[in-house]
Length: 85
Image 1 (cartoon, one colour):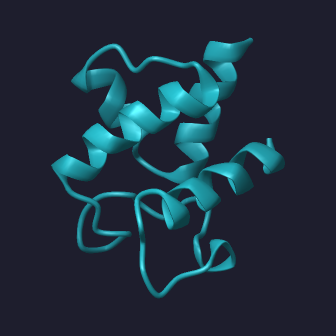
Image 2 (cartoon, one colour; image 1 turned 120 degrees about the vertical axis):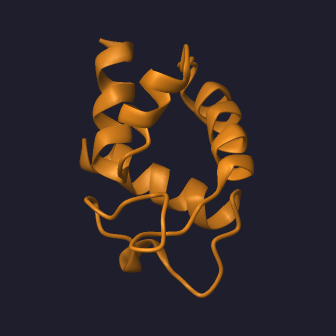
């Protein structure tokens, strides 16, 4: 699971282009959206759905699933792990 979280952090930094941060700066429980977290927006959410499918072959079916999965890095890792099991 730690390896999965690290891969997600690298994807966020490299492909979503979170600037001024390294994977080590990203905490597992940090919210991905909103001012108290990474501050991702709806366009980033769409891109993240595509990247999850591309890198992990996991589809996020709808907005409700997406809200739960995208709460934090840890929740996204758990979501991917459950779908791959």
